[in-house]
Structure formats: structure tokens, C-alpha cells
Length: 219
Image (cartoon, rainbow, N blue to C red; front, side):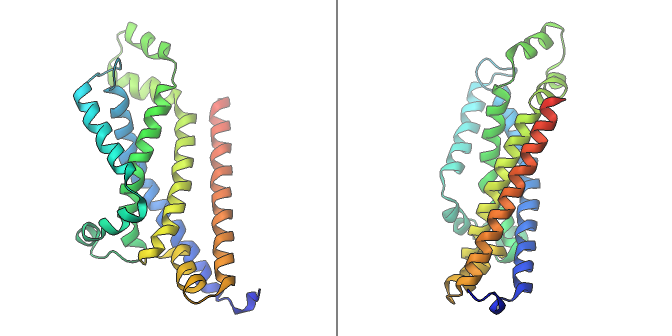
């Protein structure tokens, strides 16, 4: 393998684009997915604001969006992405489908994490007459914090994988570089380096997430 044939400026630019796509998409995914996950939890059967009809609708929408393969979602979202930000290409064009693809996934993770919180905590708060919103933000979310951080970590790794996949439609980043140079131009060195960088980035995200979970679990 001849590493001298690689244009390292392209590699670092693609790595930066992947980090930007993942970071910005993760921000909007948490911004949308966290409230949706809380709403799924509190409206479920025997929960704080039980609303079976609303829960059924939300659960159905989340399941539908999670059922669509991300590659198909990338293509289906092209007209919507063009309307929203004016282009479906590059880093900007990849962010809307990334958010739509992972927000429902994160919301379901949040719902599952909140279900793991000791029911006695909620019942004790209700017995003291604490309002629902104070139970959610003052007791439920702090109690579930380590689990929520773990959910964000899993979502970030999923986003990294999806961001690489967006290279199929010209989404930019390491995936785009691997397809254009590693696959279409048969530059094996570029393919190997991009895969190695993705592995390193995923390992770093997982390690950082595990350390944060451990820190907040001990507090």
C-alpha cells in the first residue's frame, strides 16, 4: 500500500466534514428527540399524563420513520432538503436526512431509559403533590441522566455511520471520499485510511460516552 499517493489534505477535510455533519446532526437530533421521547413516556399507559390515543399516534410515526432504511430516506428526502436549505449535496444537504433518520431512534431510546427509572421516585413525588413538569425536570431526568448519556453516545455512533453512508448521494465527508476515490477510482489506500479513521472516531465517541456515564453514575 503506497501511502505517499494519498492527498492528506482531502483526508483531513473529509474527516472535518464528517465531524461537522455528526456534531450538528446530533444537536438537532437531541433537540427534537428528547422532548419526543419524554412525551412518549408520559403519555404511555399508567404514566404521568396517560393519553393512549396520542401515544398510539406518536408511537406509530416513530415506528414508521425507524422502519425506512436510511439509504432510501436519503433519496426520498432530497426534494425536502432542497426546499429547506437550497441543496441536497455536501455537508449541508446531508444534515436534514440525518436528523430525520435518527431523531425517532433517539426518542425511543429516551422512552426506554425513562422506563428504567424506579417507579417509587415518581410515586413519592406525586404523594408530595409535586407538579408533573417538576417531576419530569426535577426528578425523572436527573435520575435517568447516565442512561440518557448512554443513549446520546449510541445515537452519535449511529449518526457517524449514517454520515458515512450519505456519501452515496454526494453528502461529503469520509464516506464520499471512500466512494469517489476508494471505490470508483480503485484507490485502495484511500478506502483503508477512511475506514480506519471511522473506526478511531467511533472508538473515541464510545470511550468518551462510557467515561461520562461512569462519572454521573457515581455522583
